[in-house]
Length: 61
Ligand SMILES: [Zn+2]
View 1: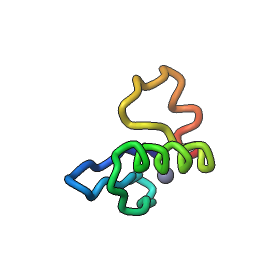
View 2: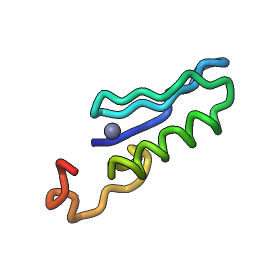
View 3: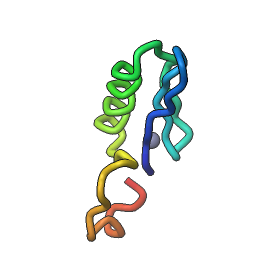
View 4: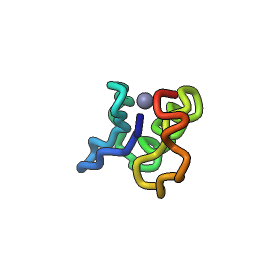
Protein backbone atom coordinates (compact mmCIF):
# COMPACT_ATOMS: atom_id res chain seq x y z
CA UNK A 1 0.00 0.00 0.00
CA UNK A 2 1.23 3.46 -0.84
CA UNK A 3 0.07 6.84 0.34
CA UNK A 4 0.43 10.22 -1.25
CA UNK A 5 -0.88 13.72 -0.74
CA UNK A 6 -3.47 15.19 -3.04
CA UNK A 7 -2.92 18.92 -3.24
CA UNK A 8 -5.42 21.50 -4.38
CA UNK A 9 -6.10 25.04 -3.33
CA UNK A 10 -7.27 24.94 0.30
CA UNK A 11 -8.14 21.30 -0.19
CA UNK A 12 -5.11 19.18 0.55
CA UNK A 13 -5.48 15.70 1.92
CA UNK A 14 -3.58 12.51 2.28
CA UNK A 15 -4.73 9.47 0.39
CA UNK A 16 -3.62 5.86 0.32
CA UNK A 17 -4.11 2.90 -1.96
CA UNK A 18 -5.63 1.02 1.00
CA UNK A 19 -8.61 3.36 0.87
CA UNK A 20 -7.58 5.67 3.69
CA UNK A 21 -8.18 9.35 3.24
CA UNK A 22 -7.00 12.09 5.54
CA UNK A 23 -8.94 15.09 6.64
CA UNK A 24 -9.22 18.00 4.25
CA UNK A 25 -6.52 20.50 5.14
CA UNK A 26 -5.89 24.05 4.15
CA UNK A 27 -2.16 23.60 4.46
CA UNK A 28 -0.27 21.00 2.42
CA UNK A 29 2.09 20.47 5.35
CA UNK A 30 -0.76 19.30 7.56
CA UNK A 31 -2.03 16.92 4.89
CA UNK A 32 1.49 15.56 4.54
CA UNK A 33 1.68 15.06 8.31
CA UNK A 34 -1.62 13.17 8.25
CA UNK A 35 -0.32 10.94 5.49
CA UNK A 36 2.91 10.14 7.31
CA UNK A 37 1.04 9.43 10.53
CA UNK A 38 -1.12 6.98 8.58
CA UNK A 39 2.04 5.43 7.19
CA UNK A 40 3.57 5.08 10.63
CA UNK A 41 0.45 3.47 12.05
CA UNK A 42 -0.24 1.14 9.15
CA UNK A 43 3.24 0.45 7.80
CA UNK A 44 2.24 1.79 4.40
CA UNK A 45 4.88 3.54 2.34
CA UNK A 46 4.98 7.00 0.79
CA UNK A 47 4.48 6.80 -2.96
CA UNK A 48 7.10 9.46 -3.61
CA UNK A 49 10.07 7.55 -2.25
CA UNK A 50 12.18 5.07 -4.17
CA UNK A 51 10.97 1.54 -3.80
CA UNK A 52 13.24 -0.75 -1.80
CA UNK A 53 14.35 -3.77 -3.76
CA UNK A 54 12.98 -6.15 -1.13
CA UNK A 55 9.45 -4.72 -1.15
CA UNK A 56 7.93 -7.96 -2.36
CA UNK A 57 8.65 -9.58 1.01
CA UNK A 58 6.37 -7.11 2.78
CA UNK A 59 3.86 -6.24 0.10
CA UNK A 60 0.72 -6.62 2.15
CA UNK A 61 1.93 -4.96 5.31
ZN1 LIG B 1 -2.81 2.95 3.77
